[in-house]
Image (cartoon, rainbow, N blue to C red; front, side, top):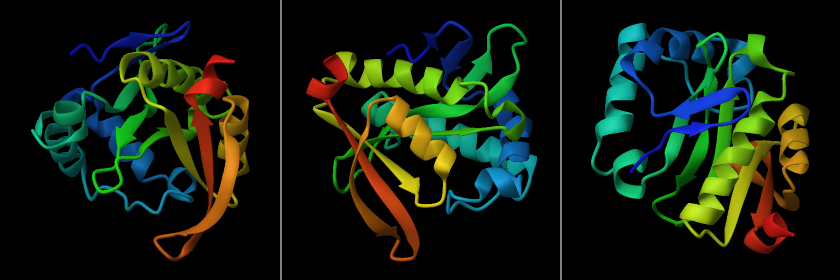
Length: 177
């Protein structure tokens, strides 16, 4: 399955080992990680290990579901911008969309542009009936991205029972209308 995509300004593709140093830096930026609930990588080698497992694990998103978070690359500079993609949660079989960008890339519309491409992939190729987005209650920027993409707030919840979140939905019908 080809998981390489192109938008006006971006390339989206599976992670490669050469992305590890950028991924490490992004995930070690406290402001980038503020609303994710994730922990930073301990080293560039840990980021490399993550990339290897994420792209090659037969039970992971890429191999099992033919989707997942993909590296986002600026077409002009060829620089790593962050990641974006859809993923299916094993237990619930709900598919969500998510992204993370280097702080230097915020405010350029890259998240919206990359997410548009991934939503098209989800609805056209995977025939999903709906995609969801989990957004931290205080992450106003990501709430705006979700709303620009056509997501509607479904309800509020506690992420892992701790973090206040918003549960957004975008249905197939809403996407095509």
